Image 1 (cartoon, rainbow, N blue to C red):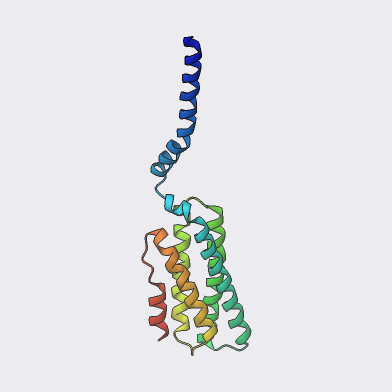
Image 2 (spheres, rainbow, N blue to C red):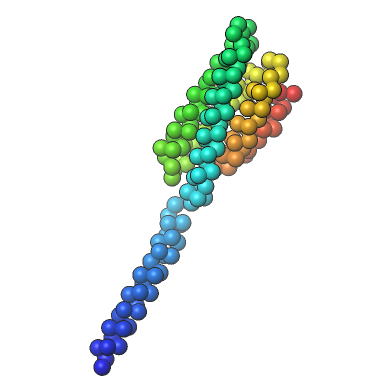
Length: 165
């Protein structure tokens, strides 16, 4: 008679343990990994990296196409836009490669941010080109979204607008 109850009790204990294992693992994982926010928002980061890369490539292409004979300032701005496009491509690749580890992409983000600033400085010396300004503003918006993942303040739009005006 006790054997029947023992089997039921063992079965109930096993099911309880089995049901609580995912919750315990999730709790362990959140304490084990300090970048759980990064894990949850990887899709948003990957989209932002892709948009930065696409926008940088587009404005770089359009600027080269529209400046067949650039003067020195224009040539410098074109080079900075090309570097921005190249760094954006590299950053996008690194985000995809190190999906769960923002420490691996922190240096790449900083290089991208510095390249963005250099391009903005070079563009400040040129007459306004709406397609370039729209593209750079869009990139600044995405950099502002990514900056908190790396412990930085997102003030790229403010800095870009201060340079252009």
